[in-house]
Image (tube, rainbow, N blue to C red; front, side, top):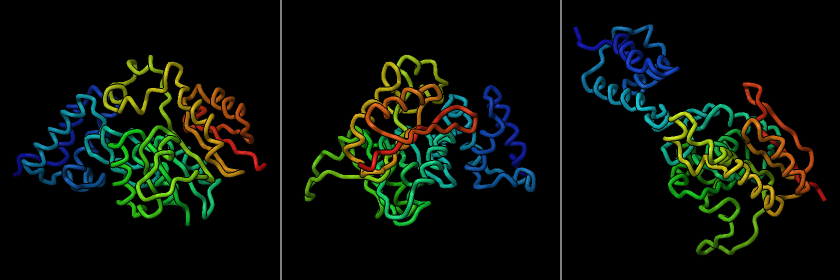
Length: 291
């Protein structure tokens, strides 16, 4: 009889991660990744042999998770909007709250639109919008070259490379950098989307280790009050938008009023706030005037 059986190995993993709130889920996801199995195998093939190599790799993954490294970074991929995205510690892990931004933005999206995704990270927002729409194109900007490498890999993986471009720079500044062989001209977009850094600098140390230690600080730190990037975006967005264009911004649960005021102060209209699945205000939408 094999030394390691599937169900027993899983239960060992749950015990190893017992200090974590989602020990059972994490233990299962890691075992499925190692063995190439599905959730049904836990019940339909509980006595499936686990090879020594699989077992050792599983133990390694469990040790990483016990050290509070997120499962997504251990696996190198995570699901978002029904798609699988490559991730590394150079980008934020796509999360369910951000799916709300994509779902609401899709309601304003139509064929032929051009989208700008600021602080694109893994590219999950822009690429999801492109994947679920027709004849749309987009640009993603990020200050991190390592993040853009992940975004580009995701675009290729999803077959969207020909419909998007990724540029390095600080927010809109990425499009002000001349590219070799390309005439520099001002770009206009029908939609701007962003999940910018919005955690107040002083709050980062108190975050759960999975976020505060392992996710990139550059993608979290929103300045002293968490509104630094919203001020920058609100101040410059109009210049890069076509008349009637939409802007969708993810925010902290207590920031929607401030972000709405910033946009209103710059002449944006039709301002709306959408709440996440926990009932917390999470996404601000506004529109540039037609005239």
